[in-house]
Image 1 (cartoon, rainbow, N blue to C red):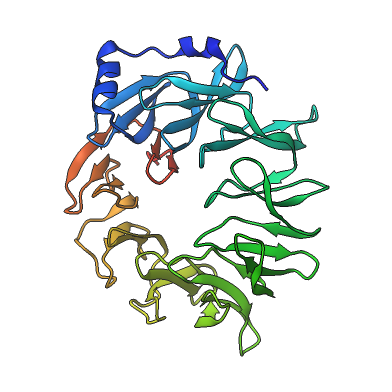
Image 2 (cartoon, rainbow, N blue to C red; image 1 turned 180 degrees about the horizontal axis):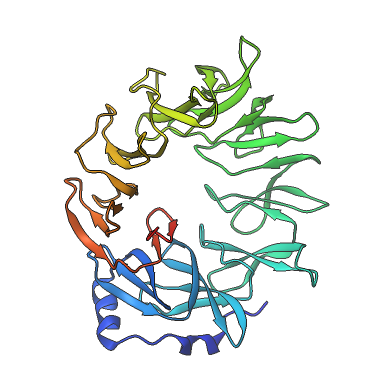
Length: 373
């Protein structure tokens, strides 16, 4: 693997003023947006940290590094920019996986048709922690990552050492609150294991989510014989009956659950609390999870609005798009295509140029393309 590719460093050009600003105040990126051929990175105050025409696309932000695709001499590389705009690491990975626990996976094609790939794992110096001989991975979560090839599969620690292995036909998906979903292809069911590999919830569900606030969504046939989602506790018992077409993770004591509309053509969503009590009717077309006591929903007119934890609208403002609030800020696109970050009073605090084609929120790692439409 090509790593620490020094010739890429000359690609970036930014002013001494910008460098000094970054070094003295150590601001963190808020968002990245594409304006023409240039990508511009701004901080929480809306100030430009740096800009570059050499980024092709952005994959995510984690542990102080912006993971991006760049091109040099006709080749595409995965590069990691620090908060001053310098490239800390560049590799020839097909995708710039995010750093988690100081580790990032890399992926490379092993055939000319680029249909077969292998994965490995590096540290921030570009040194291999896990060799390039695995066929599947999940990113690190709670210090562990799932990896597999034809001979072995299971969870490894940040040093690449297996903590526990899984048998043939089993696959895992990442830890949350000390438990990971595991599927058994031999019977087509899901259960959960702890960090030692012990099965703590048996393989009895058709589909599951991750645990959040002590609950996980799970799909199984109910008393009517119809499969549906409900919520289980860490003992594997349904504490909210399986009665929904789809369900989200709990955030701040609230979750969104859905049924089919009267025509049976799309989901409509409601809000429930952790006791399964309905906070709203089934009336929302789409949603974003609660954050800082506020959630974004799409109404029956396909416009976005913000609701509080009682599912009441916080104001009369409507938008073409709403992002989640973090640190008192949320990205919105107004009905007249103005792009901006607002505060909880709905007031503009940071403006994004109207012509921005792509906006990437570094806090949530969500990318919004072609917001002009």
